[in-house]
Each structure stands twice: as C-alpha cells, then as structure tokens.
Length: 169
Ligand SMILES: [Fe+2]
Ligand SMILES: [Fe+2]
Image 1: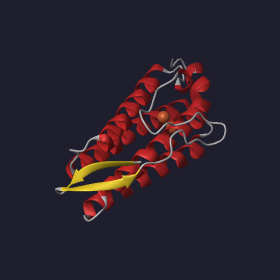
Image 2: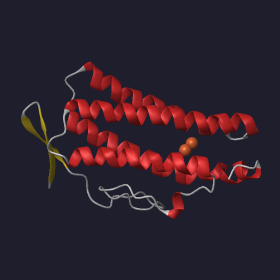
Image 3: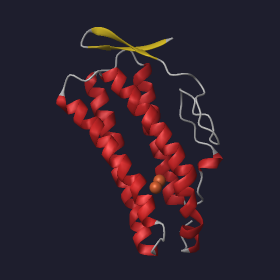
Image 4: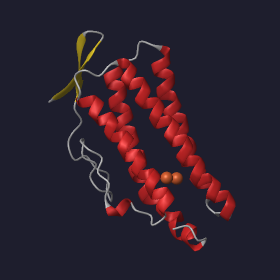
C-alpha cells in the first residue's frame, strides 16, 4: 500500500506505515486521523485547548500526505506551523511551571527541548533543499503523533493536579 503526492511534476511514492501501530501501554495511534479522546484531557482548559489545536495541525499533515496535489511549499509551511505552535505551547506550560514552582520542571523541560531540537532539524533539512519531501513529511507525521501522544499522556498528565491545585482548571 502506498501513499503518494505529486512533487515537481512527478509522482513521489512513499511506503505507508502499518495501521494501528502502538507502543505497550498506550492507545493505538492509527495512521489516519489523530483522534482526540477523553484520555488526553488534563482538566486544565487552556492547556487542553492548545493540545487540541496540535491535533488539528497533525491532521492537516495527514491531509497533505493523502493529497496528490501537495506541493513542497505546503510541506514547508505545515512544518513551520507545527514548530511555531509547539514553541508557543511549550512556553505556555513553562510559564506556569515557573509561576507555580513546579518541582519536576527540569525533567519536563528535557522533553520540550527534544521537541524543539527535532522540529528545527526538520525545518533545516527542508531549507537545505534536496530533501525527499513526502518521506520527510511522513517522518514529521510519525514523530509528532508519537511525541504528542506520549508526552500528553505521561508528562503533561503528571502536572495536571498540580496546576489545578493552583486554581488553573
Ligand atoms: Fe503539552
Ligand atoms: Fe509538556
């Protein structure tokens, strides 16, 4: 099974990832829409809204993978959108960590730093030119889904009661 989109006037084929791939203990992340479910909810409105917006961006990436008319520039734009939104969201969480003196800040920041580094690497590869854009977009899709899913369900969930105790819900 292949997904494809036209690139520079030619059809670029990329292998589809297995459906329903999962890591032990986590829900299956289907290689289609990234579906928001109750288990992602932290009960902290401002953060939940931002996480939902991430799902929208990841679904936009999936839409581009499915669209035969996707251009390289569409890929560049959506990677920038994901990166910009991540910087905004991670800074929001970090603002509250500092404000509430969250004890696990150092550990949590490591995960955030990983995302910042990885997403800027994708953009560097795009800006360097010559990248296999469909393959790169598939990589971004896979990375974003896995990172977001695991990060929200583990690291972000861990601070939720603490944020709520400080009146954020
Ligand atoms: Fe988060
Ligand atoms: Fe986080």
